[in-house]
Every structure is written in C-alpha cells, then in structure tokens.
Length: 441
Image (tube, rainbow, N blue to C red):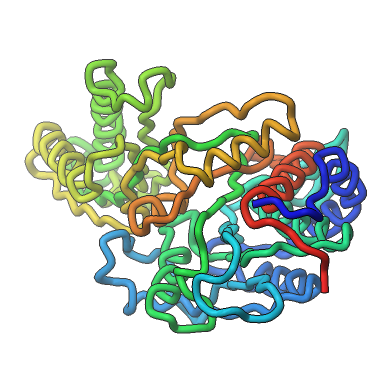
C-alpha cells in the first residue's frame, strides 16, 4: 500500500548509500560487545541504545524457561536463564488508532548471541575487535547475525532521513539463545501471545529474519537436534591395557557408524522434496569430545557433543529416538560391557518449509528485484533458524532474508558492506510497498 509520498527506488538507493557510515559504526559497536550464548547482555545494552537513538523505547522480555517448558518448540536450556532478556521495540504510527486501523506491519527478528571464537591467535585481529578490509567488516557476530539486525535499524533510519515514517507498525526483536536452543524467540512469542507487555502478536502481519544467507529467500530449513553421549568403559594401567575398555576408541567407532546413518538419510530416495537439488543437506557433526584422565591410563569415560540434521516433517522427538536407538545398538555391538548415557540438551528444533507465495513474501521478493534488477534465489537451508517458531507456531508469513557473509562460526568472520546496503534498501522498499509511508511527524 504505497502512499503518495512514497520514494522511488533510485531515491531509496541513494538514501541508503548515505547510511554506510551508520552501518559500519553501529555494527562495529555491536561486534565489540562480546555476546556468546548465555552471556549476551553487553550486546543487548548496545542494541537498546541503538534503538533509543532511533526514538524507539525497548520492552525487556525476560527469558523464563519455566514459562516455556510446555511449548512443543521448547529446547532443554544449555545455560541458566540468569535474568537475561530480549528486546522488543516498535515504531507505532502517531495517533494510536484502534485495533485493525493501522496499515500493514512487519517484525524484524534476529539474534544477538554468537558462537565461541576459537583461539584468538588464529584471527587476523582479536575476534571482538571489528575491522574493515576490502569492503568486508570482520569480527565474531558481524555476519551471524548482527549485520542483518543493523540493516533493519538502518532501514528505519533511511526513511527518517527521507522525512518519512512507516504508516504501519514496524517491530525490532533482538533475542538471546538462538545458537543453542531458540528459546529466546520462543520467549518473545510467549510474551506476545499472552500480552505480557505493550506489544501483541496481532500487531504484526509479517516477519523477516535477516540471517546471513546471501540475499536469498529461505524456502525451507532442516531440523536440528543436539545429543550428548557419555560412554563409560573400564580404566586400567596402559601396561595392562587388555584388562581395560577404552570408551574414547569406542566413541570414534560410534561416530563412524553415525556417518553411515548420515549417508542413508541423504540418499535421494529418502530426501524431502524441498531438498532434492541440495548437495548433502543432512549433516551430522561431532562438535565436542571430552574424555580420559591420564595419558598412561585406559580412560574411564568419553563424552561426545553431537549435532544431527533431519528433514522437515520428522518430529524432533522422533529424530532423537531414531538416533538414540542407533547409538545404543552400535555401542552394544562394540562391547556389551560399555555403558551409554544419552542426554538431549540444546536444539530440539524441527525443520520447516516456508510459504513464499503469501502476499508479504511476494512483496519482499518484488522489493529485492526492484533494488537488484533480478528476483532473489530461493534457498533450502541445511541449518536451522528461529524462523521455525513463526512458521510452525503462528500464522504469520515469514522467511529469512539477510546479507552476504563469510566464515560464519569460523575464523575471521565477516559481512559484506555492499550487501548490507542492498539488504537495507530492500527492507526500505518492502516497508514502502507493504506498510506504506507518510511524512514524518
């Protein structure tokens, strides 16, 4: 619903180009605020200040696992709640009309938590020291996904600089715990459903999550579950190692067997239709291994931290049950004297397919095409995102659409500044086309 004051695409692009210093400076502040999952509050404080600079007051949504535990999309926490909180801020058109009288609205949702950095000395510069080189802004979280959140802020700032404001509600939701559970976004949805603050779920007509998938529209994503498997063997002096039972060696054999299951799930005849053209969509990962007590002793225990992907349509509990049965059978085959304990903690996240044919998603694709001269590619994603909460738990149209990044979860993570500008321009164009705009009061 564009208005008579709507800017044309060229004006939007020119206005966004002027936002480059803001994009770099604001993202740099966010990257410098270290925010590993479970300790995100430094970045929350920076984000709250950035929202205030745009004239937006933030509601604080405290993460309370007890309120969420019965939700079918809840995952067992990896960290204490500890009073941590999300932020939810809204641009609300002046005049405060009654329900149903505003223009169409949109919620931008994204996470502030980041994964561990690895050894600092592998980075060109320290991971929380942002730097720009060759058009890329580097630092942990620059791509995944603080850059996308800054694009959303810059979209509203661009409209302000054009003397305009959205004619509908535009929300900004910065959340915790996406990297390990997704319970942050679940806490926001709980608060919106139960009217625990000023905002309501009915305030929003569409959701955009600016995850760093290279300006694509996400069409589907896999499910993900985490399992922690502890094997207990029999310790012994290495001189008499035949008397022992090595759980670390058993763990290595177990992972090799799980890779066979991974191959089976990736077979063409077992694929979900949304992933038919995707190379190796299902990935099993040994992300952590801990075990042993002494180099000259057969170890007593070994704990494996494992991540498993699975296709949409398979409930997370079913995936966990199938994988757990495979683990127990293999451990029994390796040695019946081994004991095994399996704990599901962290992601218990089903996959989903997004409906990109809704009016909102078609307008988002159209906005991208206006800015870039060609329609966006559609992506079937081999990872999980918080989009599942909106797709599976609400009727709101949703997808992931964010900038180009590289080395996410890796060393020298970075986001493309030019891509950030294109994404910002697309967001502005979407607000113009979906919400409409009017002169700023």
